[in-house]
Image (cartoon, rainbow, N blue to C red; front, side, top):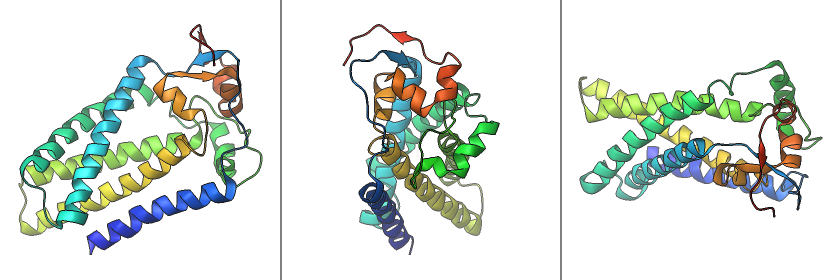
Length: 234
């Protein structure tokens, strides 16, 4: 049953993103050329995010490969890879929480962004936002919660200390927690690439154009967020 639910849920998440893009496309703002760039993420933040992403992708691929293709529990080198990447993911999740928890505190202006759903359903997309907007903050805290649930339940599966019924419950919590995490990650990836041009650059190169920062994160930019980048211009 879970195999069918996983196929429907993951495929459905991709289809919803495709339909959104077909209906509304990229948000109206387009990356500018020849303007100054400002720093958004340090190399430490980018490295932590990259390692966390690699750990998550390895967990997702091995875990859902077992569910959808193998139709059984992980074993052999796939199990070792899954558990090892889980450790990497756990450590980097903690580091990201320490790095971004303060920036992800909800503020009064976040409710304005939330009421307009970030303009992802249309309307003016110039909304107040600090270093992270309300949607990114919500995703961050949901990721922390789901990460805690999946890691603790995964640890319970690796070190079985409960009875048969208890282990079955832990397994269900782990599977459905991982599925929710994967679904949210698909949407997060879509919003960071196709839906918001210029966002991917920030987590890869660490910089964004000054105009991008003023448009998407005005409160952060007005608060002297980001220092000038003296690197090459586009």
